[in-house]
Length: 165
Image (tube, rainbow, N blue to C red):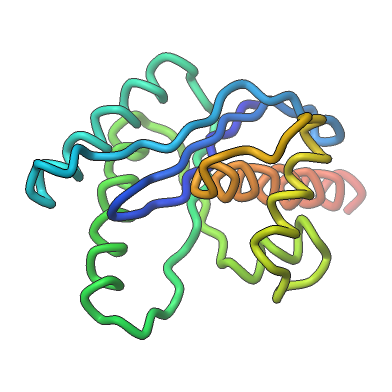
């Protein structure tokens, strides 16, 4: 199965694409998408969504795993993050890719075994699981890869359980 993980952000949206048989992971591609700073927010969202559309069209993932909204102290930042998430969800839906959403707690638990793990611990586990020499950068792309791995782990477990039921 091919999964695209997405970490939506109003400045940088990370994505990571992984192929997996449920036991092994093969890194396909990852990056951070930034909307040019000289554009207004709506135009940056459009630039991010167009790049994500291109990636989905080119790499044909079977599923899209997206980090769910967390609670932010700054309301304005939370609203912008929600708008970025909305753009990602629309892009995936328009492409006909099924969307799965995971909380930061679920992602950290699936990768590190501890829901309150630090970002660096998650980044290091992504590096190890994907057999990379260095931790993936930017952090948004690393988080997106973590979301994809989380989905693979959860989907594989569900498949094995339903097979045994």
